[in-house]
Length: 162
Length: 279
Image: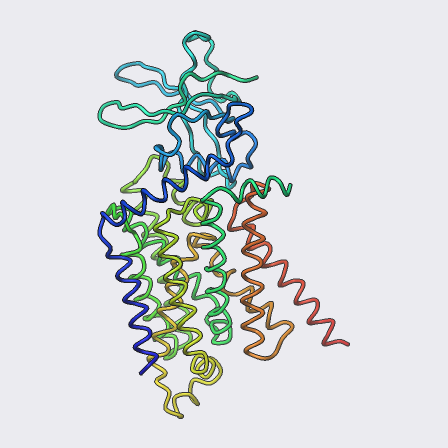
């Protein structure tokens, strides 16, 4: 009997955890975000003015970090990011606007994550953009923008590193 | 390399992965011994395919918390499989195979018919092989994993004696008044929870390795049930920990790296066991 009561107690804890309201979750998320931001400061590389150098991480770590950027972009806003990967080009069929992205693969080579980048206007012209499938290293400021009601992520004022 | 490892350990998602990975490895190894001894080794594989199908339905329904659907469906399948398995062995095997492939095919078809993202191949690959799922956990997922793991370990500790009795001689356990049906139901529920949790760590195709390898490794060198369970738990946790650390350092897939270490440990234990039996 004691066993059954204990099981019920444990199940209740689980159910309560599953049924907690959104406000509680938001608060928890806010705390997590704060902790995450603080922890990120610890591994930023201030000497090179790069907050997050993805070129020094293993492919598994890079994929996970970029996944987190896509999931929680607010934690990375304004940070200087350096990453390398494959250049990908997308042209909007309606506006004809070109979008360039730096794509990285995960360890199983079946999943990919990418970040759009925009080269710094004062240093580059449209001819300076790399070709699709080129191996590139870009460095710039992580930012977001709204387009057609959707939020997109971008590395702004990026520079290409040889 | 040590500096790099210390740097990686500062990332919140690496901490989450280690916590959840260790807990999943512990839970799967505890029940693994029972499953292997009851000759249900392959049930993990079948249930993981069911969980894959359930996950596809949850994705199509755009559920925020997919666990709400995946967990109950997997538990129901586990109960049905274990109940039938005790009545008719051959039929149970066939049912397991049928349920397994049907759920896999159904899930894959759903993901193709109603894609939730532009990268269907990636989504399927992540679910089947784990990919980096364990490194992309949210804080909420970590808490759910902790609560479920505590539940599994508590069940195992509380009902250790009865699980032991049912594992070795179900008929005798029934004769001495043990409610075998209830405990089989409990084992089925716990197995389903472990399968759903382990999908994040190694993906649905590799789950069986987490259940089978630690138990078989322990049985190769030890004969006492308690010793086998303890060795199985320790070796499983160590393999998961080493596998996660190696995969983030070397950039290899997390799930398969853990399974490689499990397989290597089994080989080592098997050799030791053979040498001891010859001596």
